[in-house]
Image (cartoon, rainbow, N blue to C red; front, side):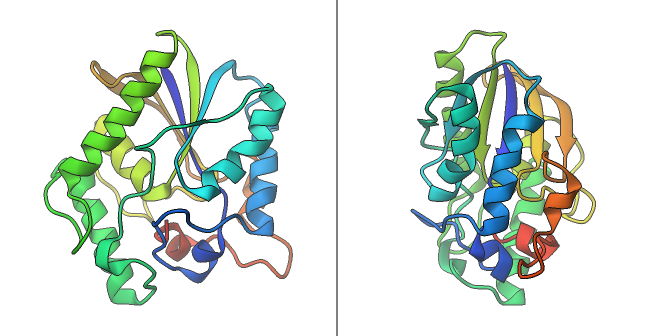
Amino acid sequence: MRLLLIRHGQTPSNVEGILDAGYPGPGLTSLGHRQARAIPEALRGEDIAGLHVSRLLRTHETAAPLAAALGTSPRLTEGLEEISAGDLEMRRDAAAVEAYQANHARWSTGELTGGVPGGESGEEFWARYTGALRHIARLHEDDATVAAISHGAAIRVFASVAGGIAAASLEERPLYNTGMVTLTGHPDEGWTLEDWISTPIGGEHLLRGAEHDVTADQNADAAV
């Protein structure tokens, strides 16, 4: 399977730097919708056999333009959700954001133990995310290209570990809204990292919106 893991478009919580991982979560900003509308053209050369989303609203809104272009409906796939913020949920202070980021940096090394207070452990995250991908794999041919709209921290941790690449900070390997990581393989057989596009796949101009929009910056990248 060729897996296109796409981060959702910008949300108000991204703009405010809020750790907002809970259900149903916020929808997209005006910039987020523009980022989403640019996805179909960016992926025009891909033969996408299926489109999957998490339970959170922002992935559904991000997937809508691509689903319309493909003439399909996104499949809600539990397990693709963002890494839980636990007791840090809805906080935006530096200590909370730093703790959330530090936890994911450690997980990205393959040390999938512990987690933030009140949140899931690394083992629990890995089991539910891999379980979602195993479910997706069962629905498609082995050589199919499948797109999944998911979340920044979840994609970064999963792709870093599954792709066998060195852990990196957000500054070294960011994943802005509608950035995309491409993996080939299977949940039961292992993965190979094909590509990591940090900036919006519709173009770097989508890092910034109109004058009234706030840049989807590095701090926002931590805010799920």
